[in-house]
Length: 111
Image (cartoon, rainbow, N blue to C red; front, side, top):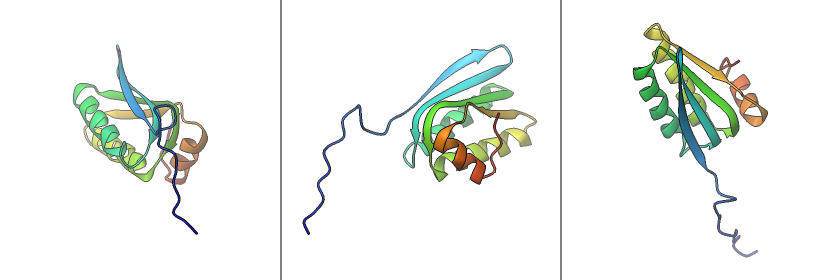
């Protein structure tokens, strides 16, 4: 049995992760897109930490996320604990598909 050779990933097939911001009068919204894998977990954690310094209410919109790993779940859990300890809030919304299942298994609340 020979070695497995997968075709190289192209921008259309590679895992990607982006996060953009939208400022609302009562919240800072982080809009995530792509897949929150092991490499993207720290990026999500950094974005949540930065947002928590700038707003009392952070909304994480995951409607364009189709996968979230334990690293992503951990980033959300840590941000929730950090914000709650400061009397602030993290709201997770727009969760669907496999990301919803991962958050349900981890008992992370979302809207």
